[in-house]
Amino acid sequence: MMSSPAALTVTPEILQQLAPTGVLRAGINLSNFLLVTGRTPTDDPVGVAPDMAQAIADHLGVALRLVPFDAPGLLADAAVDKVWDIGLIGAEPKRAEHIAFSTAYVEIEATYLVWEDARFKTVSDLDAPGVRIAVSERTAYDLWLVRNIHSAELVHRQGFDAAKAAFVDGHLDALACLRPALLKDVQEIAGTRIIDGQFTAIQQAIGTHRGNEAAAAFLQAFSQHAIRSGLVASLIAKHHVQGLSVAPVAALA
Image 1 (tube, rainbow, N blue to C red):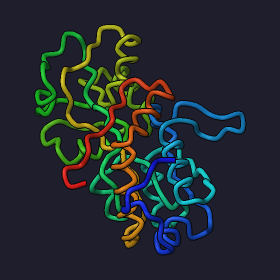
Image 2: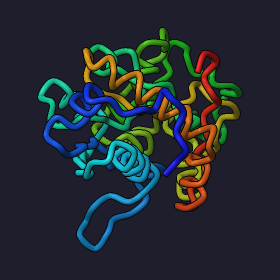
Image 3: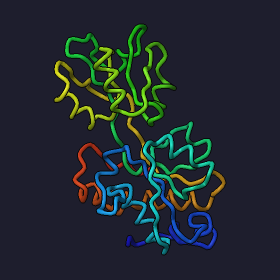
């Protein structure tokens, strides 16, 4: 267990907000292969995100129950049903309507896969009339694109595999995704290349329900202490994850 600054003191109010059932229920996004890298023999998720949830539960002194979701949008939707107490997904303004997020504990670069002979040189070149970009709907990077792409057309599909198929079968101009995933796909899809740079860095954070002010403050402090103490870096190393970066300490943390 980490040594704890005063901000990580567990009060009865924090415990009531984060473990109202006596167990910390942690929403886990199974589709993020960087944060969930495997399964136990009993099919529980394994990886950086489950381990972060376990560290929080250990600090609170309660048992952990992982609540898996097949996609981040489904996890975010479930906030209104309160089937989880914390959710480990990318922090996005749309999701923040119902979820109070900590600042990021890890970041993941997002960019585009394009055809080798395409005219595009930078990520900004893709936002142009007539350009079609395949993207997995309601991912954190899709939500960023929806807010920031003004001229290109986003071609949404449910899940990354479907988005990749749309890119290949429809010979679309680009496939948007996390860079680590595209590093694999550029080897599999002949005649493609990855655009240098990033259009955004996905901020993977820890969220709780809006209105849980004490819990949100605790999770913010926990996230920052996990960065400073080396816990986040140790979890990345433990699970041998490539393409996941420890987020910088927040300016006001």
